[in-house]
Length: 189
Image (cartoon, rainbow, N blue to C red; front, side, top):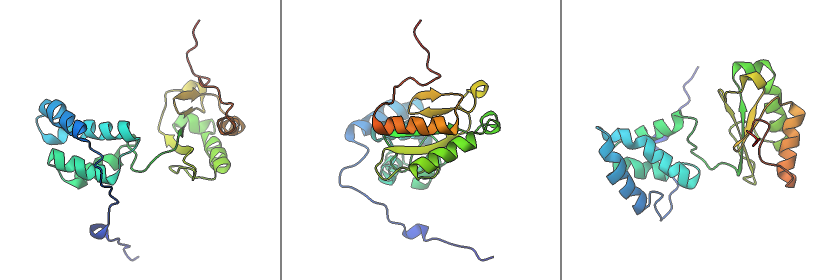
């Protein structure tokens, strides 16, 4: 079998004139976070969180800017951002649908729920619809094993799902009739 290689060293990163790491963010990183850590690499998580919280994802240009400020290699920033599922290296949709894939949810056929959503939105796991409305992901466990299968639609936990219910929730979002709260929301007494 032949090795398939890619020209990583020749990869071009899309950039914009305006930096992602604003002067205010740089000041916060240097003056607030860096002093807390013995090594500069320790401030990498706060820097990635800062960018992700502000933009909703971590662009490659921002990774280069973080590396420069922290005095670490861009590869260290990229490796960290791509290792952890919580960081996004491409824009995500307005609605993030996170289907649990833990063993309890798998046993209760969460795969069928994922497949129904994939079919309805015509995207695969990890993809975003062309209109940037939906992004579909799978998570290892969302802590609702007793009510599996479960998924989170943005911040709303939905439990005891069926493939049909997943499609209904997507359709409600699409037609503007979705009611926030989910089935796992704590209700006021």
